[in-house]
Length: 354
Ligand code: FES
Image 1 (tube, rainbow, N blue to C red):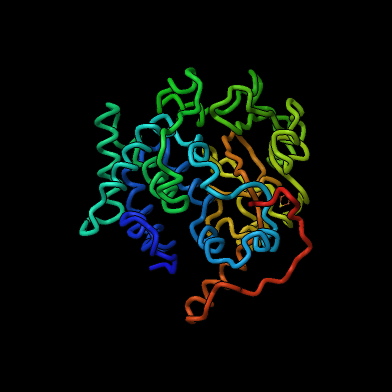
Image 2: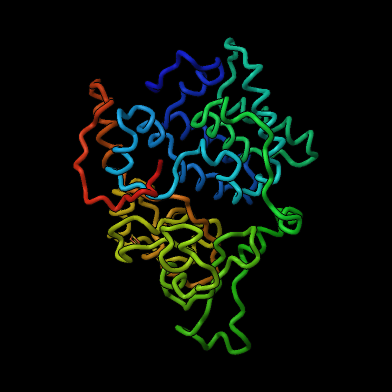
């Protein structure tokens, strides 16, 4: 049970707010079995990009603006501002208008005496959408799970409304198998490619829904270094964090946390997480795992020996230590509204998460 205020909420919002990070983690583990391969990684990445614990920290903060500065947040981490856009990298985004409508109906007709678990309710809504859209349910379970969490963080009032599907026709038409094949494909190195070593070149795709969103990089180069050569767009104009190339970077030495990315396809073609990357990414708060090739990486540290497909989150920050101490404070039963955070050198500027 979380400590989120429940008074002004609808019965369904109250039901959702009973589910904290651990309950959601168990729910996602259960649902992963029912999610099509095309969205298994994407759904997990999305939940790393929009952690419930960070949302709750802001919901309880006396001064959210100050907290954003203290956590060096840049970009926008708030789901309420990106309800229709946060999940375009999921294959299931194609069915967002139907999913949004079905989840809204489920929320408004929710009976407080409902006894089904969160995962069973998600599966039931996904079945309904699949039937209506005439697709396999596995294609909409991931996006339906995302919709439930979006409602938990944004609230029903902000969530309701007509959903928008943001893909062009060409990309919307792709089958899941086609997307999986494209992700798995490596660049041909030519007839004598087997003789090449460091002069091999690989393609990095950073938006599967944009045919031009790719850059080429050298073998065993880190993802951020390769991205810096891509001067095809005015990156700063698109996102002030993007000082050079499509991936936001600052330090290039695993010190700032700016360059985190999700790996949709090809995680196995990246170098293993080295000690420094593993330690720092946990401190930043992005992922806490001992896996050698996880779905979340620091682009300035992950070197590739093959083509990969990545997704770039809309924000970055340093919040791992803060959330751990907040959890500790809550476990000890203290008021968690004003946890102590040292005021750090504010990387955060006016464009921090707000
Ligand atoms: S650019 Fe700073 S951690 Fe990668």
